[in-house]
Length: 458
Image 1 (cartoon, helix red, strand yellow):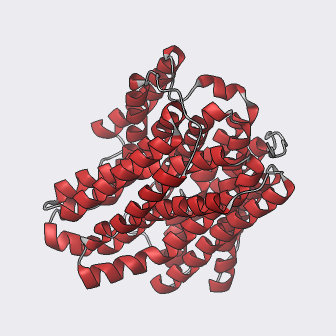
Image 2 (cartoon, rainbow, N blue to C red):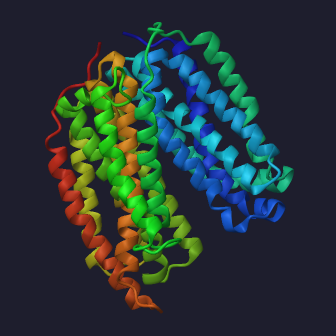
Image 3 (cartoon, rainbow, N blue to C red):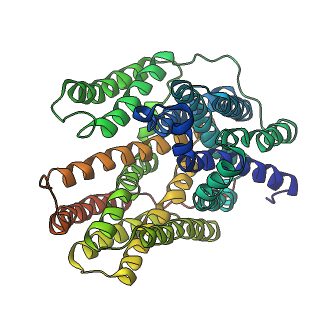
């Protein structure tokens, strides 16, 4: 089964939409000082980014299910129009509160856009063909990460901070026009019952997890009423959500999906991959600067090398999976490298060169599982469940990232004195790296349970 040039052009534009979404989370950070100088609200400016990320996390599983019910093309167009509307509103915001609200709207569109593109690829191509295009996600992510700060700085300096939002409109409009005309997917059933209670409970659980990991131990003490209330919500909301899914006619996350071993393992391994991959990044920076005494600029170069490791490993793994049809070895290798990197960081006295090697190990470990797990999930999904499967897998990874960041933060702050020196940071981060090892070994054990099913050619 060959892929037409027209289909490839549509995929290129879908990736352009993903690039806009990813780029937006990168360029805004560069412009934040200028935004604060113009709008004020220094005490709330972090929510310009946090609101966007939390809204995107909530949107991912919901849009995935809506695509299953009402058609992926339709849901994709709605999501990018929401994203563009949020972009325009952000560009016209007059207060910090308005900007935060509009960034939430933009984040809702962004999350739907991302998962809709994954689901569209799953419907356009066989799993074996799709492996080629899943690799494009890696390159798109790398391009946005590497160019985002530069583009944000240039636009802010030349045309003001509002331009970083309004620049989305021309390319976004082109994507909408071409996808509306050229993308042809099978029609979906129109009569469906949206699981509104499930959506509300899932959103409550995701918001509670993200707020707990953002505020606990920083904005609020671990024993404060706010922190304890959020912790209770993190437990109660998922329980109520599961009960609601058992009774819903069209549940957001059908519980029957977990009867499939591949899907269950993908969700569990994706959670651990997020926990270790992005959850530990901030502490790698702290390790470089506070323990190894590497300058801020050099640390930035080393983190760029790590990011290149993520991108190249992810892209190479999808190319290999497309050639062989087998994805099982990639998550296994990923967890082995996570454990090895954690062990070496804990016991080796590293300089800049060795630190680069260790960061590359973390990057390659993260890259080897990112698209491999998505392909495994797609291969196990029925056509009517592609969105729910991909949305649940993506949500598990994002939840892992949030909880990983909170877990490692608790390890560090709980083992630092009031006035820490380099030796104190070294001791605290030593515990962080040691903690990586058993978590990665759990991920390894789970990865070995992943069935070795070849990607389907049909």
